[in-house]
Length: 450
Ligand code: TRP
Image 1 (cartoon, rainbow, N blue to C red):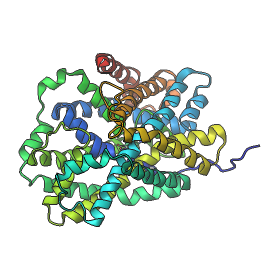
Image 2 (cartoon, protein in one colour):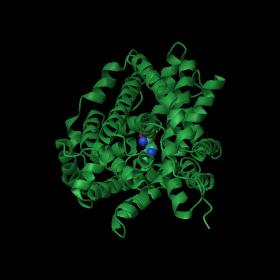
Image 3 (cartoon, helix red, strand yellow):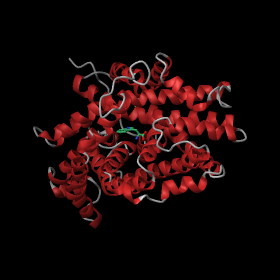
Image 4 (cartoon, rainbow, N blue to C red):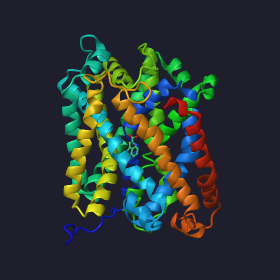
């Protein structure tokens, strides 16, 4: 007997789908992760490789995911078993569900930090630098054993709540309002940051490449991982979102606008953060705390800084929420179909397990900081590295190969809305050769990093 009688959902509108995909893409990846990964990998050279990864690998794979999802009308594992029954392509789907657990586990921890900062601005505590400065405050907070886990829990509860309510009413509605607001405030902050006195150095760091960085294999892997992470790619989030789409929509335009918007958000965030990094004499390579330390410094300098801080961390937490929702949705959609659970049951159980998986990431910064997993990284960074730099590109590789080689050409072109246009040929060529070879070369050349 089946306990789940709910029909599969659909987006209310094409715009709702595009906004939800944008909401998935734009998140902590654009501000927190982009700034510190760019800082650690030398700035402009990294940025160039990152942009190439988006153009040559990212956008074609977004299209591949949308196409698979809409055609199959199923979750990321179900999509492959439906389109190519009994073949190993389903590995991409399984990797995807695993990545959802790993990424959301640490994503929830960092998103919890943003909520803590929001509270700090709400009460006025963070309006001016605490004893010892914002850096000390940040480190003290994230390395304490209990507090960050409570915030992670609150954030995960909100994420579960939205997924629990469902695709149309939960995800689609929130994104429509918050995304434009976040864009506006980011632009205001970037403009202000440019007046702080570090503008010349900050912009040079971001836009004038140090050519020697191009010889570093690690920079390519970091850029590839960042491209996948920021575009929500390689784990079936966009397959899942595409599966709630009816077939009258046009996919290529949607894929292009998601990529462009996501990239703009990241670059503007860079223009916001790096001038401030230099103005306040912070090392751009100082790691995962970069945004959490520089931004409060910016706010403390600004007129109405407390208000801007409040608004900013609210919007960042909201952007993180719409991204987290897409991560949880990947796993929840799978459990609903596979085990015939209701949406409510699946969101609570899966969400809670992911919360538990994330607890060690939080503890790994303080009480468990002697534990390192990959190449000296703490638990959180190791989870991020394994998922973003290995699982996502690997998932993307399989997805590209599946659409390029595993699916009949005329069918793919029709399912993608490219039809017989020249662009469709270019797309397939990239999926067949360019993207897979690029991903493999980057993997092989950086293997010593692991
Ligand atoms: N792209 C989001 C960000 O930049 C994070 C995210 C959401 C994600 N869904 C994803 C990353 C799927 C990888 C895969 O914050």
